[in-house]
Length: 201
Image (cartoon, helix red, strand yellow):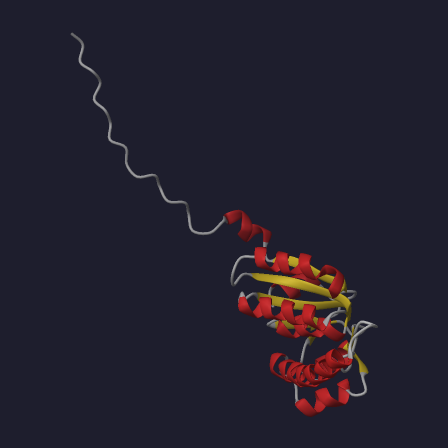
């Protein structure tokens, strides 16, 4: 009678290596914030949540702004998820788009980048009731002061300088922002290896 073959005891399955080599080769993730933030709010928030926690990446800005709440939500997610984000203004970064840009740990601008600082704008329904208008006016005044202070803390920027830029409103160039040490000036048109400059920042 033939003996049954001895069963070999299986050892534990080897653990996967730490990290993904392919991700390391790809380098940092990239995200574009463009157009009206109000129209893209849901998509942009979803994309930020899908990024790995505390990961490193580049956010390109070309937005005239939009809803102040959309800008606030984007900045809050960038900070809450501890993203090591480098913000790059490739065109315009104005109004509500300033908040997520200020939330980036490192910021780059070109000499012709444009950033519009201005007070919050009151927008309401045409059929708003008097009680609602009164409450919105109270909330508006309080929120405006809080958001100004938030920008002061995020950049950080001198409160008096921000006040001069914001009221009544002013277009600030990338060169001016860099002179105020709120961003780094770089030239992707004539500079050598501009992507390397951004990636290794």
